[in-house]
Image (cartoon, rainbow over all chains, first blue to last red; front, side):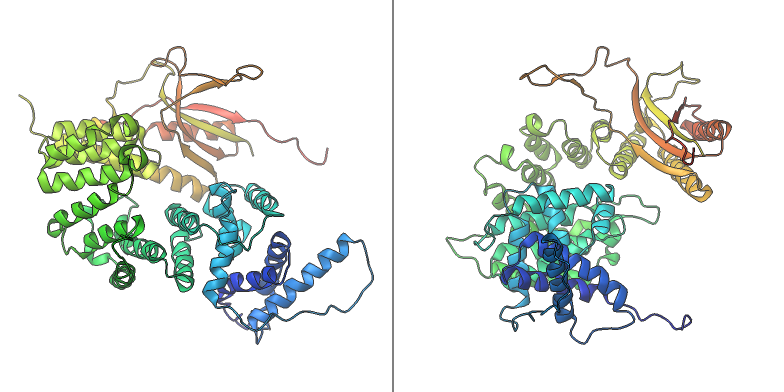
Amino acid sequence: MLDEPTPRLDEGALRALVPRVLAGLVRRGEDFAAAEDALQEALLEALRVWPEHPPREPRAWLTTVATRRLVDARRSEAARHRREKTTCAEPRPAATEEGDDTLFLLVCCCHPDLAPASQVALTLRAVGGLTTREIADAFYVPETTMAQRISRAKRALRGRRLDLPGDLAVVLRVLYLVYTAGHAGRVDLAGEAIRLARQLTLATDEPEAHGLLALMLLNHARLPARLDSEGRIVPLDRQDRSRWDTREIAEGVRVLQSALAMQTEERPPGRYQIEAAIAALHDDAATAAETDWPQILAWYDDLVALTDDPVRQDPAAVLGRAVAVGHVLGGAAGLRETDRLREVLGERHRWHAARGYLHELDGDLRAAATAYANAARRATNVSERDHLVRQAARARAAEPRPR
Amino acid sequence: MPKYLLLKHYRGGPEPHRPVPPMDQWAPEDVEAHLAFLRHVSELLEENGEFVDAQALTPARTWVRYGGPGAAPVTTDGPLPETSDLVAGWYMIDVESHERALELAAYVSSEPGPGGEPLYEWIDVREVMSEPPSGD
C-alpha cells in the first residue's frame, strides 16, 4: 500500500471551485463569514481525502461537506448534542455561470469599508481558495497575524448587505494589488491575480476588467527575463527578449484589442487599457532600439489626461511620460518634465532613478551616477537598491576620467 | 542554542579600521564581488542550519514619542542626525556559542571592499534573550 504512488491532486481545479461553492452557500442565505470558515474546513478535508478517494462530483462534495460543517457549527453554538442525520441541501442546479459567482464574491471581499490589506487577504482566501498559511507566506507575516486580519475583515462584513451591485473599480484595484504584491515566496501571487482576473472577465464586459487582465499578461510575459541567474534585476532595455513569453503576449494583445474595440466617444479607454497598450508596445519591439516611443508617448498623454491634476493625483504616470519624452525629444526635455514632480516624488527612489536614466540618455554620466546613488539611498527593497548601486558604479566607471 | 543579532551600521560604532568611500563610487567589479559575498553569507548560514533571519533597513529614520493626552505624536529626525548611530540591517543567527557568533561576525566583516580588499567593517553582536526553559 505504502509503495503505491499517491495520485496527484489537481489543486488548481480544486481552488477554481471555491468561488462557485461559496457563492452558492451565500446565495442560499448562509452567513458569509460562517460559510467561508466551513468551506476552508471542507477544502482541508478534500486535500486529505481526495488523493485516495476522488469524488465523482467535486463541487457537490465540497458543498455537502461545507454544509455539514455549517450545521455542526450551528448545532454546537446551540449547545445541542443530539445527533441527527444531516440533510444536505444539494446546490441548486447551476443557475449561474462560474464568472458570475466570482464577480459576486469579489465584490463581497472588496467591500469599500475594508482596508486594502484586508480586501487582498480575504480575496485570496474566499475567491482564490488559498489557505491562511499560504497567504501569510506570500506576505511574509506570521500565520496568526494573517488569520487575525482575515477574521477581523469577516467581522467587519457581518450584517452588511452583500447583494448590492459593488464597486468594480475597487475590485480591479485589489486584483492589481495582488498582482504587484510580488512573485516571491511559495505562492505565485502574480499568477493568482491573472487567474482571478481571467475569471472576472467571464462575468463582465467592462472594458477595464479586460484591460487589467491584458496589462497583467503583457507585464507577466517579461517576467522570465527580469532577473538573471544570480537574481539580479535586468532593466527592460537590457533584457534577453527571447525569454519573453510570446503566448502570454499574444493573449494579452488579443484581450486588449477586445477591450479597446468597445470604446466610444463618450467612453474612452480607462487607465488599465492605456497601461496595457503601453506594455504591448514594449512587448512588440524586437529590440530596445526598435521601441515605438512616439506612440508610447501618445498613450502617456492619454494617461495623464485622465486626472485633473496628474502631478498630484497620478505622479507615476507623469514620471513614465517624462521617460517617454526623453526618448522622443531627448534626455534634457525628459528631465524638464521631471522637475515639476520634485515636490511630490523628490524623496522617492523612482524619481531619482528615472532622472539617472534621463541623464544617461542626455550623455551626462556624472549626473546619472549621482542620481542613481541618490535613488539607491531611497530604495525600499534590496534587489532594487543593489541594482541602483550597480547602475551608479557603472555610470561612474564609464565616465571619462577628469584630468 | 543561543540566538544572536549581527548588526550592520550605516554609521556610528568604533573608528573605522580603514576609510572606504560609499559603494556607488567603487569599481563595478568590486560592487559585484561585494554583493556576491553577501549572497554567499546567507547561503552559508542556511546550509549550516544557523540562519534565522536577515533584513536590510532603509536609512530614513524618524524618532517618535507619545505627545500627551489628545495631542499628536511628536516626531524628530534625532538630535545629531549626522553622527548618531544608524542600523543598516542584520543577520539573526542561531548558533552553538558566543564564540561561534563572533566567528561568523568576523567573517561577515571580511566582506570584500574596493580593490577586493576586506572592508574590516565593525559588526555589532547582540545576544537575543531567550524564552524560559521548559520543564523546570
